[in-house]
Amino acid sequence: MFGYDLGIDIGTSSVVISVPGKGVVLNEPSYVAFDTETEKILYAGKRAYFLQGREPKGVEIIQPIENGVISDYSLTEQMVHYFINRVIKKNIFRPRVVACVPALSTEVEKRTLISVIIRAGARSVCLIEEPLCAAFGAGIDPIHPSGVFVIDIGGGACDMAIVTQGSMSQTETVNVAGNDFDAEIVKYLKEKYKLLVGLRTAEDIKKSIGCAIERREPVTMAAKGRSLETGLPLVVEVTSNEICECLQPLLSQLTDAAQRLFERTSPQLVADITSGELLLTGGSARLYGMDTLFAKALGLDVRTIDDPELCASKGACIALNKMHILDNYGYEFKTKEDVRIR
Image (tube, rainbow, N blue to C red; front, side, top):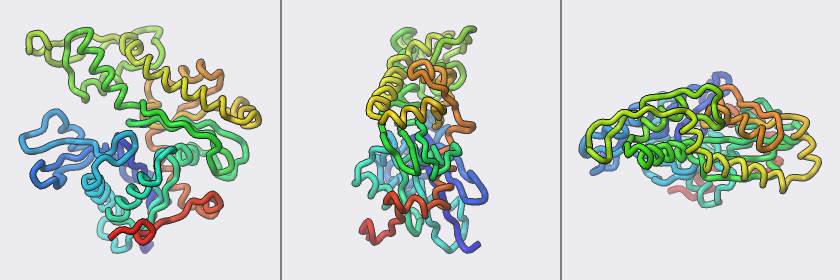
């Protein structure tokens, strides 16, 4: 083997890299810790993720990807370069990369992502929409002629698409996802209990007791933080149904968007979807009851894919072997000359 081909999902919350024949080889939080004076990254991935809220002086933690879009070019390039090097190690051959991109990305955003990945060490890059990659990763054959409804709920955005014959018939993107759930929990605890908690605590609450529908047997969790009234440490008991209630406005935006997508879909594709099932992918699809929520809203059978956060990267890896099919829909590898990188 002279070099690597890589399937990469550079998301708001995580970076997942897959290699044909090996599967997922890297799954790291897309966080970087950098020196505020030199703007050079000190750590990336899990170490930076767990350092958030505990930063020493002169160090800042950020997510250089927001809502699936690059918000800091330099730090994203350094982060992707770090992760690619961890995979290919000292291999002198630069890899070809298939990378996921939000369904409704602009041409500028796409060119920027290609530029970042090439400057980070890739030879050439092909961008494929995230819900399409997620469908491939969920086991949908690119030449499958029937329609399939895929909803990919990540950390920064939710992409929805009707996929048929290796392409997308209809798409919808909602900037509501896992990070918004965390922020809403922080806001709820602040308003109701006068308790200030960090994003890591809010995320732990979401993963432990958060739910999209009320549980028959509510569960509780101790939320630890600082009292806004006294400034002293404070611990309150929070129930799962409280978290469910505070997340409902955001969850309603997702189900409303899915209903709008159906209204634009042809009757034949709707018939295909009705006879099949809706596929839920993305890390936030793990929220308890998310499948039941969409099933009730749309009247469909809904299935959450195993390891949903890895689906898009696996699909990008599959796309590497299916480029002879995807070529027909305009997907192609771009080099630095194509995006005019110096």
